[in-house]
Amino acid sequence: MESLFRPDMLLIILGGAVATYLTRIAGYVMIKRFKTIPPRVEAGLNAVPAAVLTTLVAPAALTGGLETAIALLVALLAGLRVSGLTLIAIGWAVAMAIRHFIL
Amino acid sequence: MFIDDFKAGLRRIAPIIVSAAPFGVLFGAVAVQHGMSVGEAVLMSGVIYAGASQLVGINLFDQHLPAWVVILSILAVNFRHILYSAAIARHIDPLTPWQKAVNFFLLTDPHYAEIERQAHAGEPVTFGWVMGLGIGLYIPWMAMTYAGCVLGAFIGDPKSIGLDVLLPVYFLGLVMGFRKRPNWLPVVIASSLASMAAIKFVGSPWHVSIGAVVGILVAALMPVQPDTRSEIEER
Image (tube, rainbow over all chains, first blue to last red; front, side, top):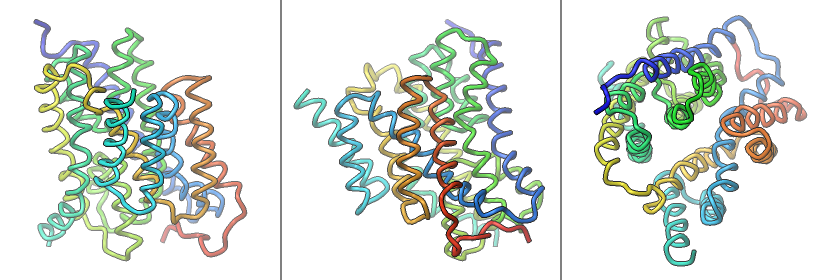
């Protein structure tokens, strides 16, 4: 039986925690140094959530297999009408149906 | 006052708890399958509190890479928080420095999205409200991690019950939620292509930072729309 906390794993967990907290405060600290934001910087900031979250979606269509790609495509279209858990349920159901009944 | 705002924050985050819970369970289950102890997995959820980077962390630890490489990868996946904390700076002015410090510890994708939504609806962003939002997700996240560790032994293959599909579909839903924003379509197209190219030619986890930077640059280089100018402004 392994010990509860290994030193090398603890180093990664605590180092990762410090790195993550720095990412959570760094933007605030930087933005406080400016009085106003140039329009192009602001346009960039407004694009942040869509840009970052897209990178967590699009590659999955390549690496997750055909059923994931189709599920994402269906969810993309469904996302024009529904959101939240309904959307997740639709994407999940499509992928599971293809995985268990077709592939 | 505080408690009312706290409850309002809790109500706002409640549906997100339901959709985030599977990922806490997923993380716990994957962590145990990669040889992490229950204590390590719950500690990781408690101090890092960023699901995607936690999953990247255990995947890389498994490959016996030096600690600094794993920590740098966690930083890369979480780089988006820099932009979130910059974007919400204008919304959290009434908070004291300590309250801001606590709020930033709890900053996640949905936490950020809900603060933006609250501010754009003209509703006040108070300390009680952000604590309801943040703690309302933080405690279930650790509880679900623990549940995932316990369940992990029983899940043979996460793919057979479709756990792997939940994460990208969840993020897709968040992306769709921002579709009314200026430059949304060119940004999403640019970030999609860049992140797909990066995962092919550079490799994970760099596709996150590369794809994001390309999308943000596209937005910054698009013609400036006068009606959205100087929305972010320090007072």
